[in-house]
Length: 191
Length: 191
Image 1 (tube, chains in turn yellow, blue):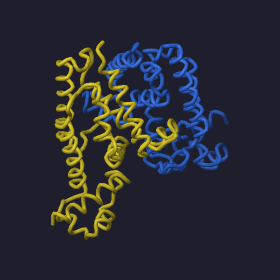
Image 2: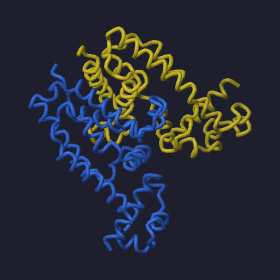
Image 3: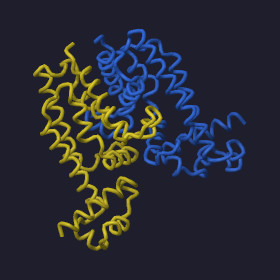
């Protein structure tokens, strides 16, 4: 049953990335997973519960990245990019969610707020330790760090027009990682 | 006829922002503009031509912003945000385009590349004049500036979870503008 669950989760991730929560079809997920719909409902209960499962896993992964984070100085941005910035599926899921957002509470908001609070607490610690400037709101700074790491994958057509390369090309990634080290060092530099 | 065209353009912008190019319905655009479909086709020829018209206008607006840009030093980011960062419709259109992007050539790519080249030329001039650091690729820097100004509106659910406020709230805007001045001065600072 555990293997069946994993097949369903993998198929569902692709389907949610391709079409968003509203557009995703349970039939298509079951078909791609090679199971019948009854099995899918038996394992997860509903399309929304399956979506919640996937968001929960993405958040848990990112919480682990944060625990591994060696240092919150100049290398922070490149670390975030190298560890979490290549997950096209999750970025697309967030984009569908953004287009559908009506000001309500997003799926998995509790875990996501907890992750964000954990990240902000680490930024604040780095500020206290003198590794990041103190004269800035750590929440807004962390939102900017997400923007810098996620944007090329979220807008691949703009990344392509700007640099001539796809944001998933290895060369693009190397140069973007180098650039993020540069900008990270500007943000972290002693005033 | 000019007024009719403008009504159609306004209705089309809302429809494309709500549903993207593929999902937009010509019937709905005509209905919201208060014209019949024949008139819409007479004025614009096709749904794609109407989309192209709107993208062309957005690009022309941004090209004018660039011409007005007084200075490419620390205030650059806040200027970009204050002038162009609140256009939810255009950001949503770019998001639909991103979700639909297959590596091909986006609509209006010629004008968009020209706009980008113009912006990059100004960044390069600022580098030569010593107003921005020289040790960075101006194309990648400009892409990062777009990321920082556009991200909260592109992912309002994340901006809300991060700061508690909607990215369209006046208070959010004021604080984001202040933050962008801060980060702009870090990027522009003499090494």
